[in-house]
Image (tube, rainbow, N blue to C red; front, side, top):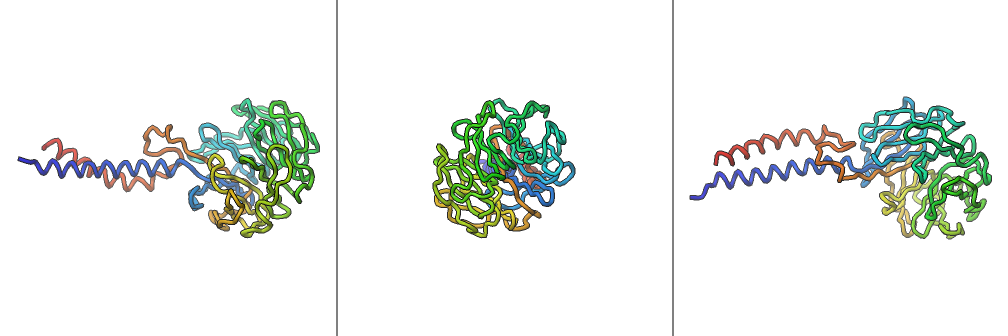
Length: 347
């Protein structure tokens, strides 16, 4: 005789398992990635959903944070943030947004208005000190000052705004005060050359740089353009995003999403937006983050955090998850799962 109770209970059990797995998956996905943006005018770091630009949370708000600019994640997805207004670098818990420490104290090593942050080849923390026209090197774990990595004014450096390591392993720094992109030895900090020479291609006020295969993209803030240069020799390749395209006004950041594989995201400082452009043609695709969303006020930097699913260990709440949203579903399906198991045992 067929035990129908067993088959019905088994179906309930399977559906409950699927539902709970969906909740776990949703929790992991919700926490796995995000677009973090520095909002300099109101001393905030905001986190947005990386697929649709919806506000996820206010990650950091005031306190020790003053005029945030550069952002970078370490291997554990903890966050380093430059605080230009009080000459510090802050270290945050990537999951909760809690301040762990003022990793680089105010003025350490002469730090004055830190802007861009990068990790050096040996793992040390490199910080662009805009007020002193240099790049300073610190121990990433203790925050202790080590040395002037790029000495003050080396190669003509003036008001360093952004820096990236290039395909050849050298450090490239946007020198906003001289309208250049300068190249330095990635291991020693010694000046190599003016990679993009002053004003080449109409460059004026370079505030952000980003390497992708075949291109070095540079934000020309004074002309409201994104310009393209050859990543090997710095020669001008053309205007990639034309002046004012999509309402672009004073571009201050460039990013290409996860591992440089998405379309191009550009901060439009004066309109308090993040705009999206085709990575192939530079065509305007739409507004990624709308004006004022999450009280965004003066976006200066964007960084995409990509989740590491292998580290989740099937946990219900991976880093950054808002467990309150998942809790009602868990409470709903847990009793159903319990009843199904009891019926199966009795059958």
